[in-house]
Amino acid sequence: MINIIWLALLVIGVIMAVVTSITTGSFDPLVQVTDALFNQSKTAVDLAIGLIGLMALWLGLMKLAEESGLIDLIAKAVRPIMVRLFPEIPADHPAMGAMIMNIAANMLGLGNAATPLGLKAMQELQKLNEKAETATNAMVTFLAINTSSVTIIPATVIGIRVSAGSGNPAEIIGTAIFATTCSTIVAVTAAKLFSKLPRFQLKPEDV
Image (tube, helix red, strand yellow):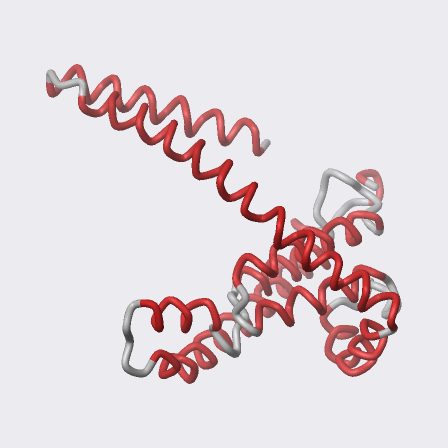
């Protein structure tokens, strides 16, 4: 389905560029489409290569945390909350540790540094998925939390403000906490409510 959606977007974009070029008598729309295609392809490669170092760093740190027992300690501390958010995930499963580390990185506003931990969490959650092509409630809830931009200290934004010469780069912390609290509550509530609807539940024959 995702491939069909992407193909449809590409085809519609090209068709609209051709139609616009014909109606306006200018090749600029086609040039813009071509430039955007190559520029975004370059951006995708730069992003992928840029993530290699971060993935190696955070996956290595996570491995050390697992081996040292740090993940177990953190998991025990936040277990009451995580168990309620993800009742279908065993408290001592690696997925729980990966999700905790990802959420912690997001709370610290580390931006792309949280991405490898999120990928690791999804890989572990997929191991518990009985229907590989359909996301589980835990996956959806975890993605909703990530999408809500849960952040306490927006370190990346503060760094950008510092580099831009802001006189008080940390003044956005209060606003960020308020915004992320609201968005996270809405995201978790929506995920939990939708998971209760029959339309979004797997039927026995689907498993």
